[in-house]
Amino acid sequence: MVNPMIPSRNPLEDWPQFMESVRLRMEKGREAYGDRSFLRPPGELAGEVEEELLDVAGWSFILWNRVRILRNAIKENHE
Image (cartoon, rainbow, N blue to C red; front, top):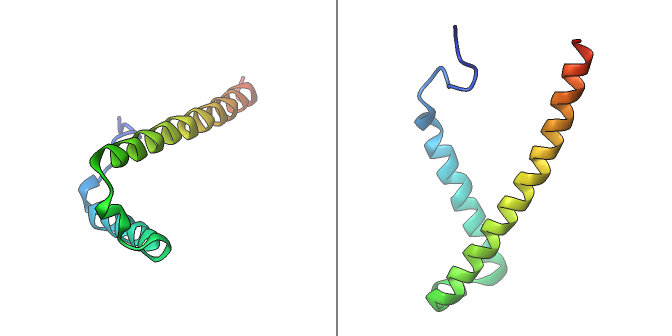
């Protein structure tokens, strides 16, 4: 049986697309803020990373709740 959670192809094929997305995001930041981030002290950068990780965790919790609601609705429709 095929596990739908495991890609049927090499997941690293998407690495270049991922890196291009990162590059575009950095270019967007450069347009808005210039290259000042490269001059910021490491402690400030670590604080920025911590804040971003908290955002990711928060958005993940929101998505997790939405997926649970959808999963429960699908389950109810199939019972």
